[in-house]
Amino acid sequence: MSKECIACGKKQLDKDTVGINKKLLGKDIANFYCMDCLADFLGCTVDDLLDKIEEFKDEGCTLFK
Image: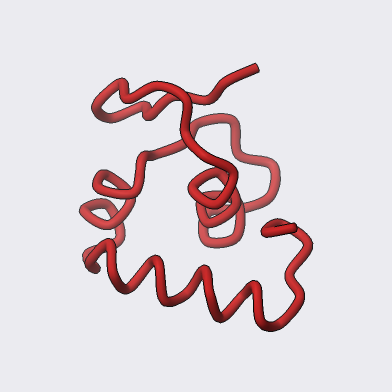
């Protein structure tokens, strides 16, 4: 089942985008944001989110396997 952004409707969010949503908003969330909308929602930049994804991958976070 493909995920889509609840803010802009962008379809087929990639696994890293879904992973960062779950990591920052809660594992049990049902609604997801694309990277642009998530950055707006959190008050940061897409680059900030990409940096966090790399950090979480380096830490071995299972949401990014």
